[in-house]
Amino acid sequence: MSQAQKGICAEPNLHALYLTFTVVDDEVQAMRAKLAHVLDLFNHFDEEYYEAMVSGVIAIGTEYWYELYPRLIPQEMAPFPSMQCEDRGAPITPGDLFIQIKADRTDICHAIGTEVIQLLKPHVDLYEEISGFRYLDGRDLTGFVDGTENPKGMRKFAVAIVGDQDQEFAGGSYIHVQRYRHLMTKWQLLAVHNQEEIFGRSKADNIEFDSDKKAQFAHTKRTNLKDADGKSVEILRQSMPYGNMTVQGLYFISCASSPKPFTDMLRSMIFGDEQGEYDKLLDYTVAETGCAYFAPSINFIKQQAKE
Image 1: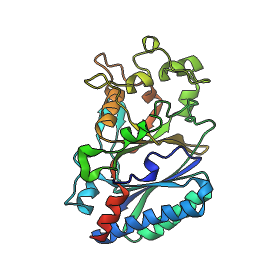
Image 2 (image 1 turned 120 degrees about the vertical axis):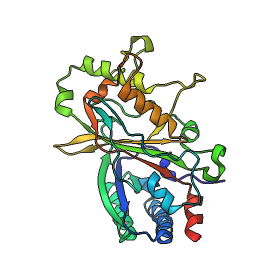
Image 3 (image 1 turned 90 degrees about the horizontal axis):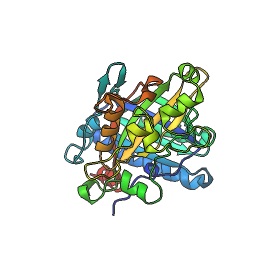
Image 4 (image 1 turned 180 degrees about the vertical axis):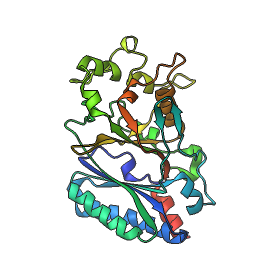
């Protein structure tokens, strides 16, 4: 059975390092081998510093995938779904390779990141480096608890990991990444009850409003979708806050067994319902990056490194 990468369904950590690369060298087999070595790095640090709860994810951009593994394509591989409606948008930005590093020690994240970059040179350029952190009791910098709708227990594996529907890529996951910058000054001018109306849940104790009491523009209304059979459309979020005293935001990561749930949620947020009721939270946060990836199983990465 194919083994999923540990970081896809890992429990929340205190720290994260997100590295986005563009590939500048066409030595495909060398890159395949190096990705297998990155997995070895994750294992080494996980064993050496077990108390830090180390986990990692290697994900390949959908465009670069066709160069790296041209003979093997996941069934639902698709580019990032760029969208624009009025002043709300989801841009596409460069990303051939995405490395997520998470641990309960920031020094371990740094140490792993340093070794990953040294290993991947000279085949890649570092496009973006973002450090994430746990904020208070798992809250976004808006003050609301993040990831409340995440599936729990074994359910998250069913949601996030490809199963038998695509056996060659079982154990993999479709990853979508967006870095949101919050308009904090604008947000903080709102009264708490207005903020709660935008989220559709209480701020202090994280209690979701009854469906009939939510505004149609509420974030939880626009992201809580049903499919044609009436089942909830789900993703597993591995997001974390990031920032400093000048810029703050959310590094959003969606993991799913299909790219469709993320695309449907994003469309609902940006375009809204038939009456045009979009996600009002987008008036207070802006997506500045967007990229689609596939994170194959450990077995796949190691096998392709040998061929």
